Every structure is written in structure tokens, then in C-alpha cells.
Image (tube, helix red, strand yellow):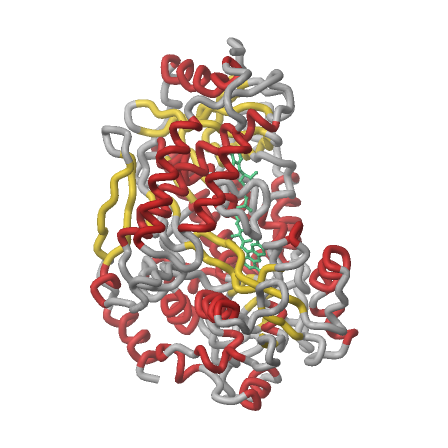
Length: 611
Ligand code: FAD
């Protein structure tokens, strides 16, 4: 084990350089804090870069009737009312300002004829609401934020930049002193050498956990690090049972199974069909959405053409509804040849329009599937896409239950309830990234000096981190990860039931034992086997939290479907599941009652329920 390590001192440490982390770092630096920004890959390569369809913000540029109240209600409906209402309110109120801010910082959004930010339709949104740049919105968001990070000035009290970026650096554990967070320990991915950060406050912005599953749209970075780091440091996780299976991932060829096909395809008029050429979604409109959904293809067509008063086609129902419909079609023998459904944009738009509106999709299918989507339908099916659950935070400040520890973006829970609306993540990143940076800076200012470094804690972290090198013949972490993904896919997937969830928990317990004695050959210089031992620890925490919460939720709601409890129950609509690490080291779970919503917000929801 290396015994010497660099120690870096900052006011605020931001872990993760996706949209949420970069926005948090910008805000923290603007408040005068010397800020570190740490990421596993290169700056600009975070998962956010993959976001395609757009960023939801009730700007009202395309439909004047849109405003924050409509966006708030849509978000609550999408989450089946388990959302933290205050987060949903802040998100709806502040996302237009964040979109305009990005524009003022140089983001080049697509434009309306009169030069405003263009907005497109997306599932669950009452009006065209997604500000977008073709189907490469995440790239533009990252590019814009990255430019500001890189352009940050010199910090007045140090010789360093206001935002100092540490790339290809993995955080392994958070450090605590006297109950509050005091920094983090990690390693350089290239050399394997340790690095220690001391900080007055820490923002987690580590993104998602899709790699718990075999079929996922997430990149290699989505291993739930921040969820697990927070949990290990004593923070709580909320709503972990709710995993979004995006209805349209590629299903063929097998090597690219799971890669996302943006909802923008359906937003631009794409329709889903089964192997009998039937547009099956008209048969799956839930009661809750009946009065907002078109009855006929003709009405759906009018909506796509933006005819006032027309209701949206059923292909634009929320993701949970569409994903389940595809699974049912496949199960009942009406699936496409490779076990999905057909998504047809070719017969809906001229080829040049498809290439203009959906350039990445055109190239993705050409390059990976040898299929021309301007001529033929795509084959699509559900893929693990997004974690609604995450670190439980204060809705205003984003602070977790551990003093000084904040979380924003996909790693934080609460905004989306049981199901996220498409486009509500990119806006989440900038709304709550800004808030996390602001309040982490405030915490650092109020709490003056750096907490002392607990060297015993640090030494034991380092010992644990390098332990696999002492067992060169021990089991390989990739084998154990693969077994974990198998059980999560088979037993905690899109359709769940009691016996299978219990099986998954038993499997996870066994895999934890195996993970405790993993071995690694070679040394610590860029050693993927060793990196995987670390990711596996994080994946196991997340998987257990998902399976445990899913077992206890004996109903179906949003991203959680129990085939043994298909109904949505009022009783389960009154609380969120919260998990945390008990004093005995075991995962604990409780029901946390929802906080009461102000009467004026409740009235908005009732109004929509009553049509
Ligand atoms: P990420 O962008 O995932 O960044 C995480 C950062 O944390 C990375 O820099 C990573 O290196 C770092 N990190 C992680 N662990 C560690 C560690 N241990 N140590 C150090 N650093 C660490 N949402 C929308 O709203 N609209 C869309 O159109 C849309 N399209 C999508 C398309 C695809 C294909 C996918 C997969 C998702 C899409 N989403 C979309 C969802 C959205 O992109 C993500 O939820 C969002 O980008 C997550 O951003 P983030 O800032 O929370 O984290």
C-alpha cells in the first residue's frame, strides 16, 4: 500500500463533473469559494453529454399557455404524487431562468421562427416544453458549462484557479470529522496513487447507477458511486425502488442492446407498432391520463402538428406506461423479431427532416445497426435508464442528513417521485446544481476553518482500498459484477414479484461475501480489475437498496411494477421509502410520511385530475 499521498485543501469539493457538478462548482466559485471539481473520466465526457432530447423548462415560447404551474402539475402526475412537492415547485419555477442563463452563457438552442428557444413535445408534458439542440442537447449543455469552468479566474487567496479540475480521479470514500463531512479519499486512475481532499463542504454530483443492470443506456461511469458514498457516510437514500426503464432502447444487434433511442423520435411524431402493424398504445391509456390523451390517431396527428386543443398521442404517455405496454406486447407474442416493438418515424416525416431533427439517431442506427431510419422502422425495447431514487436532501438547500454533505443531479432523490418525465433531468441538474453549490458555499463560509484530518480513518480507508492487491489469486471483480447484473435483470427488473425480490436479496448477500475477498493481479497502474473491485462495492449497496425497497412496496406505481400487486394503492401514496446504514452495519428501511402540500398547489393537482 502506498504510504505517501498528496493532500489538497479546498473550501468546497464537488465530486462529479456532469451538468449538476459543473453548475454547482460555478456557483460555489461565484460565491468566492476555492472549489475542486473531481471526475472519473475527462472533463466534458460525463454521462450528461449523452442526453439527447432536451431540457424541460416552461418558457412558453411555443405554447403561450405553458407556465411553471402546469410544469409542476405534470411533474407530480409523472411521479404519481410521491415527489417532494417543494422540489417539484422550485424546479418548475426556476428552470426557465436556468435555460435563459445557459443561453446567455452561449448555448446555441434550436430556434423558433421568431428567434426564441424552440421547444419540443415529450412524454407527460402537457405542452411542447423541451428546449433542445437537435438530439444533442446534453453535449451543448456540457460544452457551455465547461467553458465557464475552464474560464474561471484565479482564487484571490490561493495561487490556484477558482475551480480546480482533477480528472481521471475516483473518489473511494468520504471522510468525516465530528459527525460532519471533512473531505474525501480517492486515487488517480492512471497511476493508482492515492489522493486526499480536505474540504469544508462536499457536493455529490456523481450521476446514476444503471450499471446495476445488464441492459442499460448508462455509460460505464453509472455505478452508483455517490449513492453508496453517501450511504456509507451515514446519509439516507430515498425512493430507491423506482428505476426508470426507458421504453425505447436498441434491441438489436446484441452488442448494442440498451443504447438509448431518444423520446424525441416520438416527440417528432414517431409511432409504436407491433408485429401485426397495429398502433398498440391506444389500448394502454391509463384512467389517470384518459382526459389528456388523444382518442384517435387523427387527434394525435393534430397534436404533433400543434393544432390548438388537440390532445397528445398515447406514444407520449409517461415512460413507465409505454415500457410496460411494450413488455406486454412482447409477452403476448406481438413483439418484433428481436423481442421489442417497432418505432416508425420513416413513414411519418420526410428523410431530410428526420436527418435534421434526429441526426444522432440517424447515425446511431446506421453505424451500429446498419439500418436507415428514414426508410425503415427501428426495433426498440425497455432499457434501464435512470434512478429516481437517491440521496435524501433538504429541498431548498440540497443538504443531506450529514452536515456539510450536499447532493444534486441524478444522485439526489426526491424531485421525480416514482417516475421522471423526460427532459426533467437536464433542468434538475442546473436548478439543483446551482442550489447545491450555493448552499455548500454558504455552509463553508459559516463553518470557517477546515475540520482536522482524522489520520486513523484515512489509514484504514487506504488499507481497504488496496487490500485486493494482497490476494492476487482471489476472485475477479468482473465475474461477481456479472452475477450481480444477472440477478438484478432477472429478479429486480421491469416486472417484479415477492419471491424473485427475495431471491435477489439472498443473491446480493452472497455476492457481498464474495466481494469482500476479491483479488487483483498486477499493480495499481491503470488496472481495470482493481477499479472494478471499487465499483462493485458501490453497485452492491445500490442493488440492495433497490431490491429491499422494491420488496416492501407491495403495489405498482411509476417505475416500480409488481406483477403480484398490480394495483396502485392509496395507502402507499402517503410515504416514501428511506434506507440507511444501521449501527450494526445492516441496511435499515422505514416509511417516511410525505410532507403536506400547501392548499394552492394541491388545488392545481385536483383541477387536472378532474379534467
Ligand atoms: P453525470 O452526467 O452522470 O456525471 C457524473 C459525474 O460524476 C461524472 O463526471 C463522473 O466521472 C463523476 N463520478 C462518478 N463517480 C465518481 C467517483 N467515485 N469519483 C469521482 N467522480 C465520479 N435527461 C434529460 O433531461 N433529457 C434528455 O434528453 C436526456 N437524454 C438522455 C439520454 C441518454 C442516452 C441517457 C443515458 C440519459 C439521458 N438523460 C436525459 C438523463 C440525464 O442525461 C442524466 O440523468 C444526467 O445527465 C445526469 O447528470 P449528472 O450531472 O447528475 O451526472
